[in-house]
Image 1 (cartoon, rainbow over the protein chains, first blue to last red):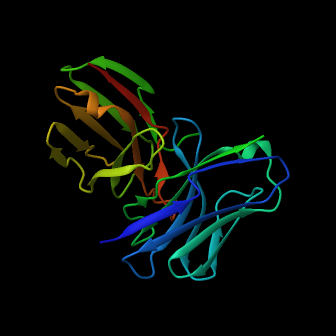
Image 2 (cartoon, rainbow over the protein chains, first blue to last red; image 1 turned 135 degrees about the horizontal axis):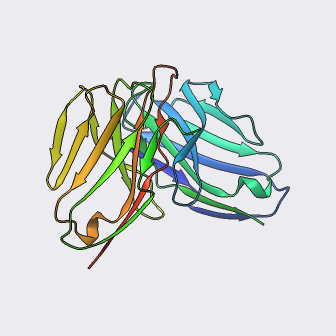
Length: 112
Length: 111
């Protein structure tokens, strides 16, 4: 069966520090991968998606970047965090672009 | 503006009551998905509705897709504390290549 994991679960970082959140999927090949951000108790904002290795599409211009170095690995990064980067980050995978999403456990980022 | 509007935003009810939450749009969707999310966790898919007018049941949960495929509803019968969570609808509008999410309905069922 397919599984998805992301880490770290919780992160507290100072403004201006770098960020790296990692996500891996097991049990499926060539998945579509996604990074979402969620404000407290609200809907999800799509940040990046990838349909294959090295292929990244950005939905919202911002302080973050994403990379897909391997088929089942998706990384969210920042060189210098801003206060506004605080939030709950979710990695997800799907079989097709508009298909059903399967989410990781989430990573809570607090920028101080 | 939000492509998918969910209402109500917040709902607090007693155990055993019935409730309905709504997901509305001015755009047509080829399908709509419903997710439930518990605090500190990722959303979990509940159901996908595809055909206009379709009704799907999942135990005490009934999902309906509007005839014009612009709206959907989730009805819960005899709510239980375990139903507490954030309910999100999502769908692929014709104008976009990716899913768009509604703003969510936060449901609290009190024992």
